[in-house]
Amino acid sequence: MITYGIMQGRLTPSQGRGIQFFPFENWRNEFYESAKLGLNEIEWIFDFDDYQNNPLWSDDGCSSVNQIIGETGVKVHSICFDYFMRRPFFKQECDSEYVLKENRLIMKKVISNMKKVGAELLEIPFVDGSSVKTEEEEIRAISFIKEAADYAGDKGIIIGLETDFPPGRFRSFLGEIKRSNVYANYDSGNSSGLGYDHEEEIMSLHQLIANVHIKDRKLHGTTVDLGTGNADFDKVFSSLRAVGYDKAIILQAARTEDGTETENISAQLLFVKKYVEEYGLICIK
Image 1 (tube, rainbow, N blue to C red):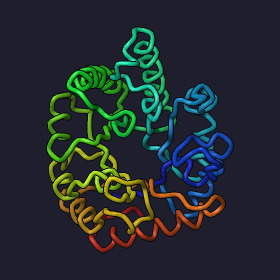
Image 2: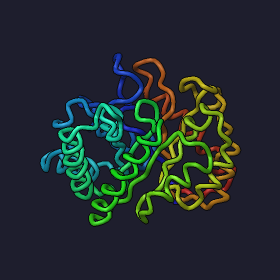
Image 3: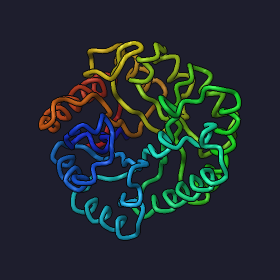
């Protein structure tokens, strides 16, 4: 059934850190705030900056996460591996034995620790700074993802890829990887910003969609308030209904002024629930 979640950090003032970051000072409180808002889960961020202090990196940290999950009922099902946004494993500048070895070790440790907090999906972004641009990069990316998928599969973890490939190309990219535990993460904002047709994308991916991010973007522009960009949410949700999507919907939408996070997320949740109800997606109570 459909569950509602939020990208970690969205309930914490940005204070100049940009739209997405790990909220070291406030991650615990975000669970309590999410519970009050009626959210079911938080998509955890594992970023490059100060990653050794991310709770997901240590046994004690994982224990703290489990304690908060137990107290709030807000779960961690997916991990957004933004680490690779800064250290893309397939780019020429990262193509050294040291960097590749480090990336492998960090990824494997995170995958191993995911099970300790009940997470089942590792999301790897291939967008913006980590976008696949050349045939050579694609070959490297496929090789690395195959290795990651094999390791993750032994741990009962699936991998969700988020790309900026056009409709159809994303599906064929997944086919080239040839791993049964590699799926797609669909992002309505990335789609609208690139001018892709939501229905064509979702129908081409069909049962391979493991996670959905909801945001809105202007064509070739940045993230904007839901309903003010080029995303066609009627198409998004009618298509999700058509393919029988019944997993998480993660709010990753635009921020507002610092200090208004709770009000902003509450409004975003109401916006999404309207479409879920209108198109008859079955959601958790």
